[in-house]
Amino acid sequence: MVGFRPRDAVWNLAVLLAMAAGCSAYRGHRAETLRIRGSDTMLILAQAWAESYAKVDTHVAVEVSGGGSGQGIAALLKGAIDIANCSRNIKPEEGAEARANTGKDPKEFVVGCDALAVFVHHDNPLDEITINQLAEIYRVGGSLSLWSQLGARIPAGRDRIVRVNRQSSSGTYEFFRDHVLGKRDFQLGSLDMNGSKEVVDLIASTPGAIGYSGMAFATPAVKVLRVSPAPGKASFAPSAANVLARHYPISRSLLVYTLGEPRPSVQKYIDWMRSADGQRIVADIGYVPIATGGKVTANSCSGAGAN
Image (cartoon, rainbow, N blue to C red; front, side, top):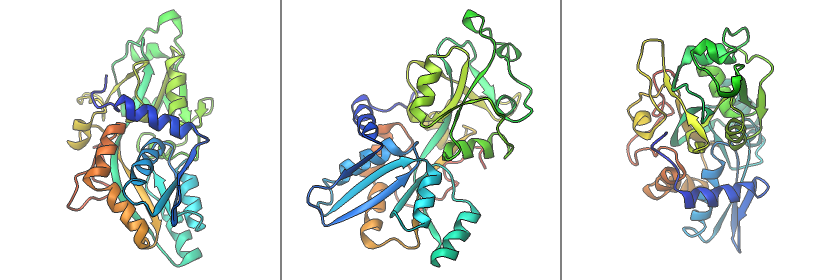
């Protein structure tokens, strides 16, 4: 079981907020509204930040919605939002589109770290898996379709591996494809979920299932596998310590993007997210805070297998 878990009170509050149509606004009587959209992985974190910031700056409201990193980036490039939340890096073609449409380059800020956790049913006897084995389960033409091929005997004789996936607009989907599948395509036939919580809920009720999501979505109803970068190498759990030591092979940065230099109120909010107060919320939700002060880059959170 992962040792770095969200505190129940903060988790429950954030989930309730995220379930409220996937969008919330902390307005009251505010002079300005910041519009934020994107990553489902970051939605509960973004909701918690927005609620706390309402007490920090009484002149600014923060409106948050999900939909996936791809949708957040698309909205940013159209100028429809102020900040895009992303669990993947922006693509070169997206940056080119921004320059062509607006003359501005997307500006990136690292606001936390995540370990992309691999989940199986709680009763699954498997304890660890390699990056290559994950690729062989998920990629087109992959060689692994039965748990017995991994030496695991599944209760009730359900040997077939049930692949649980994210929808294609998800930054988590793209990160997994790029860093686990080596940019190869996913094979058809997976169960594609709209959100991280839905992935975990399905795995919890399906003995033969495997899936992946952000580390903050771990629950006692699923088992979190240790992951090894290669056969014969040590495997590591998706914990804060292993992310910071760069041991966990599929860790990543949690990012926000603005279109060009942010205006002062947006910059102030981003600075607060990256401050000690904002990073305490990152830890409370179940992700890994970045070091406050000093230079933080998009590679600050990357593990050995995610570069």
